[in-house]
Structures are given as structure tokens and as C-alpha cells.
Image (cartoon, rainbow, N blue to C red; front, side, top):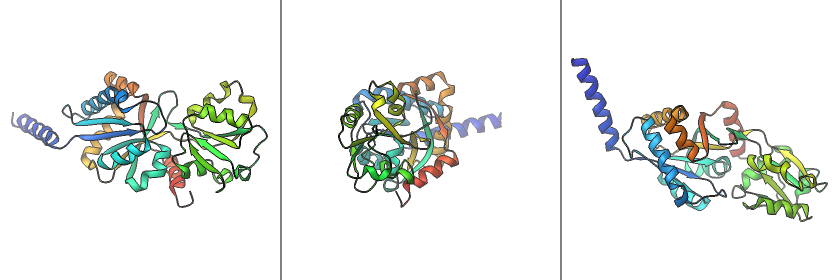
Length: 276
């Protein structure tokens, strides 16, 4: 009897300790992508509840919110424990915000990795130097270092090329076809959809990046602490195996979280290095 009582006492003590700690806060920030904080909140609440359950914690021990702009992310992420961000955001702001990448996000319909694709009007650009003086439009334009270097050294953008952020990629592609000094860097989903455009034949695919993580789960500075992160890590990896967890992931257009492989870490280090 005594071992059983001791085990129960230990479990109750652990649960009480977790309940006494402040909730672990998740912030998802995806600049340029659709949706508002209010529209996403019910899905983020469901995700937080599923993570808390998978971690064996009491309800309310995980809270989550979605922020649609870079400015909001920069304001809120320093106060949170865990951030879910696209790779360009991590490349641009990860060091300043103290982000440590932990897991790769596999997005619905995309997979755990994506290739970025640079396109321009057919015959307009033959090499990277030809982009000098042009404007390169991308949903990742808020991260100019990423846009300039994501295609590797051969297609690194010249300094005279301007980088512009815009979610209106279709409009930018039409401008390129019309002969304006515009090239467009497409993310994975946009690149996959390129062949379906009626004017696709009027565009040249200049270069594609290596496969890169589409988005990351990162811890913020020293939070949430080693023990709590270990529980969260296990919970996040386990979500797809539980019907409630899978439904919660589907609600935020995700399939699963996976560990970061060494190749992806190396690719991210090159993008965040001093040469970017």
C-alpha cells in the first residue's frame, strides 16, 4: 500500500507544482498570411487545450494566440515562452528575440519543407546580376536578408535590387509579365500553384532554393524551462496520434511537428550567418 500512496502523493505534488506555475504561452506569428487574431482565437484555444492535455497538465496551463503582423510578433514574442514562426521571420529576428529552434512544423498541404522559387518575365533575367535595379516582391519581403540569400550564392540578389514585402503575389506576377522591372520570390505553396496560372508560360523560373523548413517551433530565451519544455516537446510530437490533438492541428492547418534534422539546422545557420 505504501508504494501506491507514495506514488499518488508524488503525482499530486507534481500536478500542484504545475498548477502553481504561470501558463506556458504560445504565440504564432505569420506575417503576410490571411486571418486575424480574433478569427483564429477559437482554433488557437483548441490547440492550447490539446497540448495541455497531451502534457498531462491541468486545463489552462497552456495558452495560445495568433498574430498576423511582424510588428505584433516583435512586440509579443519577447513576453512569451514558445513561438511558432515561418522560417523568414526566424532568419530575420531569431537572434534578436533569443529564439532557439526546437521543432519543424509540417503544414497542411505543404509538408515539413518547402522550396522558394524566383521568377521573372521570360527572357528578362539570365543571371543574378540582371536583377540589379529591379524590385523583388515576396510575402517574405519583411525579411530582406532571407530574400537576398535563400537561393544560395549563385543567385544572391545584388545590393541594387530592392526587396518589397507584399501578399499580393498574383498582382506582382502580372506586373512582371507586363514588362515592369519586377521579379517575384514565391513560397512553397505559391510555387506549387505557378503552373496553374494562365500566363505561366510567360514567366521564367530562375532558381529554386534547397528544401527548407516551412515554419518552426522555437523557445524564447530561457523559457519555459528545461522540465516544462521536455513535457511540451513530448506533447507536441504526440498530438497527431490522438483524435483530439489531430483535430486541433487541423484547425490551425498543421499536420504534425517533427524534430529538426542536422541538415535543416545547417541550412538555417547559413541563412542566419554574417554573410546573409
